[in-house]
Image 1 (cartoon, one colour):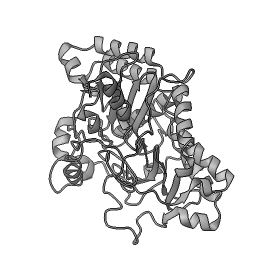
Image 2 (cartoon, helix red, strand yellow; image 1 turned 180 degrees about the vertical axis):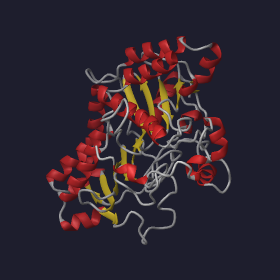
Image 3 (cartoon, one colour; image 1 turned 60 degrees about the vertical axis):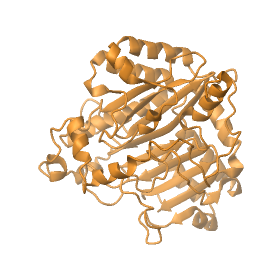
Length: 417
């Protein structure tokens, strides 16, 4: 535990905190929409995007067919669907009829695309957990636990706990809380037909779909400011990013000087050579964040198969850390899918690459986008990226975010497309 973040606390009466202290999520949402504010600009830019017809992230604007054939899961690679169905039905049974109607959507509903990672609730999709009784909160968390790997659940839950810790540190418990998250269900829980769930809020967004024993887990956003809890009942908890950071710097160290130059798209986190808009006011260097479901993201940097064998192994380890929320069986299937496209996998870097440096990197292929970025302060006072504020994004390009490619195939077979 470093406690470094405590050097950057705003004064208690600073307007950044004082102006929103005491606001509930709905009042804060209206405040966040105010034109001319930092958050108002984000809302204005993001709001029109989510209603665009979903196609999927691509590298050149053209969708590739055949990347995600819907076949039953291989033996030993099945998702824990039975446990998920039981947990979902348990959650639904605890809700009133009105809340059941509020939490449930069609499996291909546009509301899938309303998730976001900022602290302000741009879209109130599903149920807001902080306003639910403890029984409902715990049953929602039980659904997440039943779906993810044990370590994956702990990682996602850690983001929620750290968010509550940040709220305590800056005295904004009504804006930043352990339960400041929305949950929604898509489709009807079923052993074979497609259905899933969504949990999202500040620094944690997970979208999960299962069909025919297969699991799609993306988009996923995990982040933390700070990436540790150094006091209180959860003291000692750290964010899940240390290995991703170490793997990134180790990969860069494993390259030749020329390969490192090729991988480094920009030498500085905010670089004069960057085109206008390359650093987004909310996403910073991330390209595949919230509301970017159809973005064209060109592959750049170095091709992984051209790298030394140690670097290739490290790239696959980065991919593994990105998909570790998946249970063991679906994770094995996902890694096989990723490895099959290793000759089309690219690695790119922005910033310094020495231990302790701040940086951004992206591992990208036709079936994977995994990003990591160090960010500037939001509720702590610093205007250059710091090692303790980290965002990560995971996408499944070419149309299988939200398992949508599989859903379409299922609907075509069922004659409901």
